[in-house]
Length: 308
Image 1 (cartoon, rainbow, N blue to C red):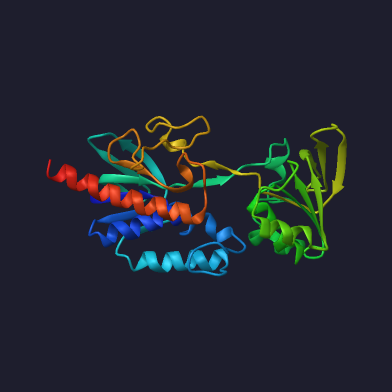
Image 2 (cartoon, rainbow, N blue to C red):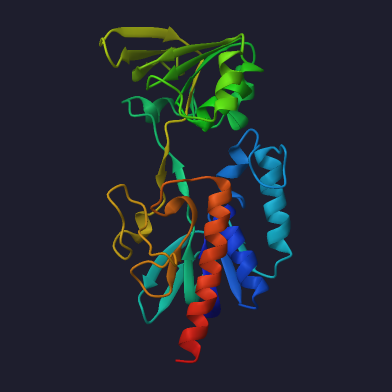
């Protein structure tokens, strides 16, 4: 059993910030990540609204997070899965593929994952025309026709990035208007090879070995449309990574972790930060703020119990 002061689950902006703050406070800290350090920021085409950076690619931003995290003094476990959790007011035991840890406090910053396209063929065509990251897979479709579905910043950014690769980008918005930043919206609206279609929900995606076409249905008229495309990039939100915690931690109706103003969950000494937490705004900067608060509150919790 490896004993630590604080165990952090996830190394995206929230978890990495928590680890840096905790390590700087002199707490023995381990941060566990089942994927890449930086989380979903690495998949962002461009970040333009984070303090200190006029513009930086998501990949470069993730690399800077990793660089800072590595010099923080925290023990980093990358590509490491959690096998079992025992979280209670009195003890916190986390078994991972690299060992078993006990901690005085835990910060859950496991983030979220892209919401899957709700069509029958999604699993069969995923990676074969249906994609969730243009930065990862957009280069496969140089000079071809692609579609993007979504209405927020992520969808707008995907469309702009793909417009420089594909011959045509068909933008399918499920609502009447975009819900992203006005600056991004204006750029999409003025882009010559992006065509906009509002109030259209994707009801089918078909093809033999690879995606060949998608079908949409107008939300008002019910009329159906067919688009012959080589790829579809899906940006319809995300789902919290809370499956491992559902029998331990209180979740809201959408599966996000409920916390108090200290970011503590229903289990004493277990905190939540970032996109996994039940809250209104989910941005990189709010995730980092959550991480800092969670680490500071965890430090306070440990000291309170040390001298109790």
